[in-house]
Image (cartoon, one colour):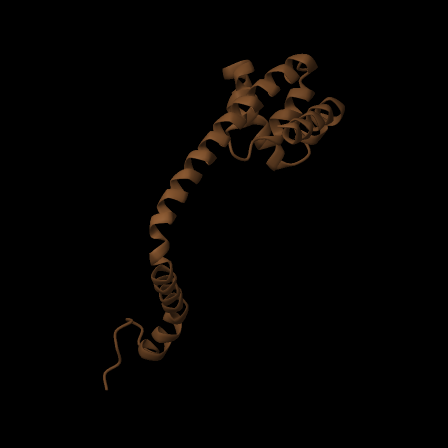
Length: 148
């Protein structure tokens, strides 16, 4: 949580310092800027929580909040609250999936070598498939076998 918070507060202050210049610099950031601005206009303070779970949209909103003059203390409070919720959800999911995997693989341990062998054969076939096609189907435009 501390690492994420420090990362986000740095971008928040970067937004206060040079935010508008950064957003209007290129087409990619202008597009992200419009998306995030629409999100802020629609959801207000709840957008901090939405952004936390929106893949690929973590930096731009933090810079935007700084650039728009968002209150530092308001940002810190709601950002820490959303970080806590985010951490609890992800740690809980990781724990549950870890326990499920542990249970599954404990029972599947005796089949490990069989599964590894099947996987190895499958990958080998995928890698050799272009060579097999080239050898047996080369020269015919329809992809049908050559007649002998």
